[in-house]
Amino acid sequence: MYDKELVLEILRQIANSINIVLKRFSIIRNPDDFVKSEEGLEKLSEEGRKEVVVFPISFVSEHIETLYELDIEYGEIARELGLDYRRVKLDHKSPLLIDAIVSEIEKLRQ
Image (tube, rainbow, N blue to C red; front, side, top):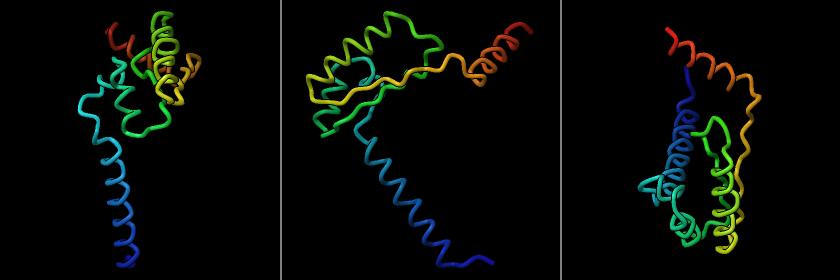
């Protein structure tokens, strides 16, 4: 049997966490607004954000033009707006990534 008060407290904490996440991301109507334009960085700055972490999850490899755009162009804009801007470097040697790519290629070959 469960302790009713403990379960209720856990549910309150979960609800509180959900509300925090919803509040933080409520300004995002279209994620592309934040990754494809300098206006996205301006929105984050206007919202009082101090840090931006870019995680380019759609890229299997890092192309020079993408790196230039993310690191140089958007990095410069972010610094001008007073944002601490960082891009997460991808781990192309990760066994999980390699296995996932192999798995997808095998599906295509069938």
